[in-house]
Image 1 (cartoon, rainbow, N blue to C red):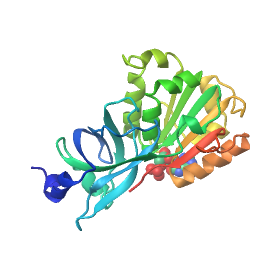
Image 2: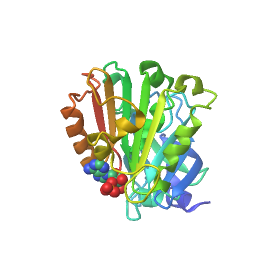
Image 3: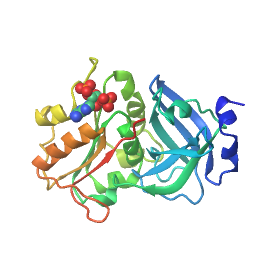
Image 4: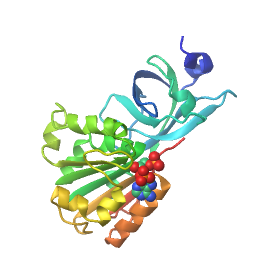
Length: 268
Ligand code: A2P
């Protein structure tokens, strides 16, 4: 029995309990895991659900997590930070295959293709674990059916923190299920800000300087052609909104699709 099963014995009795099937630790601050998917759970790629564990007081301790797996996957995948003092992640980081987690099967969120008007290029802008909803969208054939080009800009402090996204992106063209949809449509622009690597600098700086457009050989943001999805810290999201609005893009929602959408990545 793992520590987790000891601290969450009652989770088994909960109707929303799911079983962990796989855990991967990427760095001492980042991990991903997979779990069983409730048969009844239907979601749109990019949405989030509440997941968690039973707290010490016996009550569920839940946080919003983007589903990182695509809607066709028979399991669910999540990508998480480990915060030493975080009420949930200090415990969640110790899960192992066979353990139970709680999952409320009510998906919601704005980082969905339905909230964007048709366009030519889809830009996915993420810092840190904000790449999670894009890990779902990048594995959804609909993403490539709707757009001629898909560009993932992902920025972290250190190169090791990019690895989850990098391995996913590099596996896509060869993927037996969606490789043919991806083709040569996907462009990847990973950068680090506190360590030298092949690409450096904040997403915001690489956009405003025009460096990313020059490097990728594509034109600057144009509201007639470009659509954006933003997922990162509050400060990042705010700065990105300013840049996208200045380029003439407007924020969309499920009820009123437009040129870009934003959601805060879970931290804690
Ligand atoms: P930087 O190292 O220059 O702060 P964090 O771990 O603090 O959430 O940051 C994750 C990544 O997001 C880091 O590379 C960080 O760059 C970058 N970042 C943080 N805030 C912003 C912002 N307001 N605009 C652009 N990038 C940001």
